Length: 463
Ligand code: 4AD
Ligand code: MG
Image (cartoon, rainbow, N blue to C red):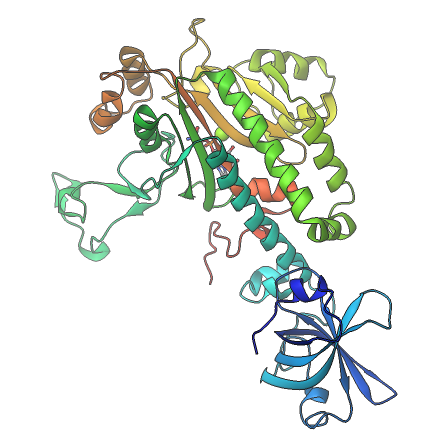
């Protein structure tokens, strides 16, 4: 007999039909009348399927009474209307096969509430909890919605390299990729001789697929990438990971306004999809994680995002009368506290801040005519702050070269990137959305370590 998934069984109208389901026991409750109720979950949806097992079943004493949370079983039985409240259908078991028992002394999940901190130490098991099942299903839906959004708009999905020789953000926060023997590094004129390394030059894990993506935009038009990115910054915050996933679209013949429009449409599309298609999981987040999450998302979906320049933002912050830890002088980067003030208190909706001082932004951003600012944008959302960073790109070779040199970088490694400005240069723009920050934003989860299966942070790469 073919196995059914619990998501389909719970929605099924086939009363009195036989079904076969397989999953993990969430709870077992024995009734005085000599039968047991098992709540079974197979991950296909939030809700459990109730299984009723009669005490007459052959292996009732031997197996059923030894089932604990975490045990894995197959149940063949009849779908019946449920007697109790809480569910409309349940399965009356004819046969229960045990795949694996689970020792309740050792297995902590399912007994009492286990803290998120403790669950991080057992990340290989935490997906069996309500919270991580729900986070993972929502994360999956957001990935699908991302592809749908860009594909529906004619963007091509590009796989940009993970190993790279160039520092896209120019911040030097890269993990080195090498096969050199640490104990015997070849030295040449006092420096490590990377010509003897695997790629014949210094190589790193990418911090962004953008530079490679720009090459493809300047040929295919609209493109996007969705891949892992790596940052060796020593940030131990609830919004930073050393390995995270980023979605980056890039559009040829586009300016900063087009970029901001795309970002706003994309975020609204993601929210709409999750509210429509992950109702049970979202219900859970509203009840147990963040009471206002659904309201917030509906509000964001229905709001026109505020757009203002960095200079206007600084002005608002300075006039706010609010005490901040970090100073808000023109020229300083906005900190999370400033970002959150703007989006949560001042405007109470997402804010797109544009035209930052060029000195605090990456070399590739287009210079504005004022000689001070760059055509950059950050999208700020409640509780998270920056969720998207993007810009129009510098398409003038001379200006680009000047910025590369200003940043103290060599022109040579960027020869191919500079070629794009020599051979049919076009205005183009794009952005990067941090996928984990998005999952945090949509689920209301406080810590970024709890929205990715196996988080990598400074001093932590277990599993
Ligand atoms: O603002 P960032 O650094 O922009 C770029 O990398 C550009 N090259 C993107 C582009 O224009 N194609 O990063 C983009 C987003 C941030 O807004 C944030 O959401 C996320 O990536 N992000 C991180 N997420 C988790 N952990 C970190 N350490 C992150 N650093 C950035
Ligand atoms: Mg940024």
